[in-house]
Structure formats: structure tokens, C-alpha cells
Length: 487
Ligand code: NAD
Image (cartoon, rainbow, N blue to C red; front, side, top):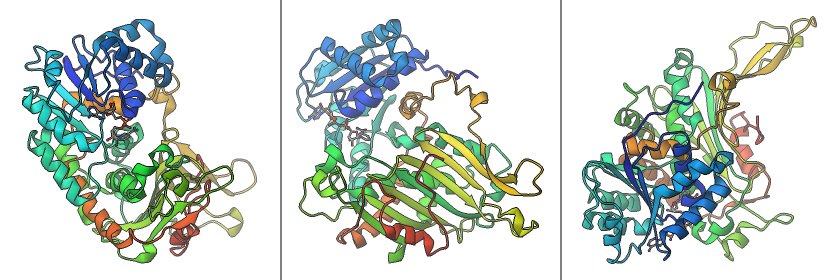
């Protein structure tokens, strides 16, 4: 099977913060790959903007280096590479100044009627200046779009303020709030599995599902981001956005159409149905200590003391008919045993066993969707052990990645940013968060952080599965976390 290319009309993409980490690691390679796959139309214009004073050629050299480092094997195609580099321009501009906007306008002549997207790959403190700057420079019209990255505020009040900044210059349908987890193939496949198959939906409720586990574990610590991360922590940095978005996709009702507002309305209902998390036993906060050859969080953050958590585990409840009695266990942490992100839907045991004890026990069925390190969908089943040894039960994994059907062996798995950037150009907001979703998630998180921010987190060993209390969170319920290994 060949990846289908949906053509788009020539567009303008202005990347603010074009010399930064995100632009170099993700955006430039993503745009190159879209050109390589034939989706970048003739006449598309990409303009990098950043504070650094350099000319177009110097920026193109920087973009070429980014492709060398992060573009993979296909970035070595010299013909496409030259064409790609010729497509990009650069305008030095300090967005806090009133100077320089004319140069940006001059770089984008005759843009009437074409889609023009402004990608804000800069710190949020610049968002207001840029929204105003592009507006005052006369660079915006009804076809303009603005793309923003997390953090979308650090609490409900700041998220509302940010939404207000954009609402002053753009309509909601022009604002694209990225959560790159939603651009991952497996996450979109979760919706296909649920809503394009009759098999799972009848089982997708508290009568058949025992619990859901959502894990985002990282091996790295906060490294160079330490001073920024301190005072933010895992709850605001990961749970409020990525983990709650994944929870929404598991828990939402089927939307009437696969259309942006229909999908986002259903996700919003889930966020509003989250029961306040008030049970102190339902939340565990941790901070990595030092280990052999491994600095502690306090060392990384350059702090003498800090109550910021680098690990969180919690039990959430979606208080509605479908999910009554089904816990959603969420955990995320840094400096953990391995890098694993997955959603696991754990089904109830078969109600009665017809097999003798000697056959062994049937394991619970688990539908697991892995996002990292490799994307995969697997269904844990119980089968008869092959051979003449009588009826012995054995666990088996049904690999639902369908590699042969999807041609995964010879087809490159696109990065989430490739999909998301082109969705911006197409004007499809289905995989982007709406302002009210972001605010609802903050409202739930704020109530928790207000209660626990001043409490010291439990220390945990680097390379572990987090503090012991996190294991107890599950053990008390007679359950256990899935192993932090590639399964
Ligand atoms: P960075 O610090 O590496 O880059 C910042 C960019 O902003 C640089 O190009 C810099 O020149 C530009 N800049 C700074 N001040 C400016 C000014 N006054 N005028 C014009 N340009 C200015 O940051 P980053 O890691 O690339 O992150 C960018 C944004 O994306 C941040 O909001 C960050 O939270 C978010 N984000 C980053 C990542 C990532 O993987 N790096 C992931 C998710 C979200």
C-alpha cells in the first residue's frame, strides 16, 4: 500500500523561532519530507523568522545541517534537497520591536487568497507580540492561520489570557493548538479501531473493561530544561495535555461525524466528566534522586530544594454511565527505566473458567497501543498451547500493526509534525485542541496542583519505575502497572 497524498494549494508558512530546537529537529525535516513525498505544491513559500541576524543563504545552510542531523536517509536526495532549500527564505526580526515587519511583508508579496500559516515556535511570552505584529503589518486575512505549541498556559487563568490574546486577532477556526501526540499514527488508529469496527464498541464500557493504563515514561531527565521545568512539573508539562488528550480519545463517545467540532465536543465532555481528584491515595508525586553517574533533579534544575515533581501517577475517574467504576491510571515520569508511551485497555477476566486448574489461567485481554519507541497496536489473547500436550492455556499476542497491509517494511512512518503541519494548511482542526478543551483540562489540573504543589514529592531512583507508592496505588486495587519494557 502506498501512502496517499492529498494535494494542497500553494501556501505561505511563516515559522517564528526558525533557528530554535523545535524548528531544527521537527519542523524543517517535516516540511522536507512533505516535499519529498510530493505534497509540497509548486509556489509554496516557507519563511523562517528569528532574532539572529543572518541572510537567506546562512539560514539555508542551517536548514541543510538540520536535515543532515534529523532528516534521515531520504534527506540525502540532492535534487529534492536543493529544491527544498530554494523554497525557504529568512527574515531576521525581533518580534518585540516595531522594526522589521515590513521586511517580512516584502518577503511575501502577492499573497492574496492563499492560505498563510504563522507557526509560533517561540516562547509563549512572544505570542501576543506576534499576533499583533502580523496583524498590524497587514499580513493576515480570512485565510490566515496561527499555530501554537504547548505550554498553552500554566494554569486556567493564564490559558484564558492566552486564548484572549489570539481571540483579539483570529477566529477560533484559525487557531491551531498542537499536541503532537494527536498526530501520531497509532493515536489516530485508536479512533479507527473504535469507530470503524463493530468489534470493540460493544465491549468499550465498564461492563467489559476492567481499567485503562496510560503511561508516558522517559529515560532522560530534565537536562538543560531544568531551570524552566522547575515550578512546572510533570502534572502541568505532561498530564494536562498529552495524557489527558489520550484519555479523551479512549473515553469519548462516538462523534456523529469525523469532523473537528464533533470530535472536540466529545473530548470536551470527557474532560468535564472527570471527577475531582480529592483522595490523597489516588495521587503519587515523585522526584528523581541521584544514582550512579546520574545527577539528581535538584542538580539538573540547579536548585538547593524544590517540590517540583518529575513523576506523577494518579487514578482518574470519568464520571458517566459508560465509565462508571472503571479507573483510568495515568503515570508519567523522567529518568525512568525505559522510554515507553502506551495506552493499555485491560479487559475483565472471562466470567467463568471451564478449564481444569492444570490447564493454567487465562490472562486478561489487553489492547495496547504503543506510541513510543515504535508505534504498534497489539491485542493480548489466551490460546491453546500448540501440540498434543492436552488443553493447556498460553498467552499470545495478536499483532495488529498489520505491517504487511500497511507496507510498513518499505513505507516510512511519517512523523506527527508532517501530518499536523499539512492539516493546518488544509484547515482541518480535528487533531488540534480547541480553546475550551484546554481550559477544561486546566480546571481539573488546577484543583489538584493547588492542593499538592507545596508538598515534597517522594524521591525515586533513576532508572526505576518511580516511587514505591506508585506501585501501591495499583496494588491497593488488586492491579499492577504494566512492565516498563517494550512489549
Ligand atoms: P528555542 O529556545 O530553541 O528557540 C526559540 C526561537 O525563538 C529561536 O529561533 C530564537 O531566535 C527565537 N526568538 C527568541 N526571542 C525572539 C525574539 N525576540 N524575536 C524573534 N525571535 C525570537 O525553543 P524551542 O525548543 O524551539 O521551543 C519553541 C516553542 O515550542 C516553545 O514555546 C516550546 O515550549 C515549544 N515546544 C518545543 C518543543 C521542543 O521539542 N523543542 C516541544 C514542544 C513544544
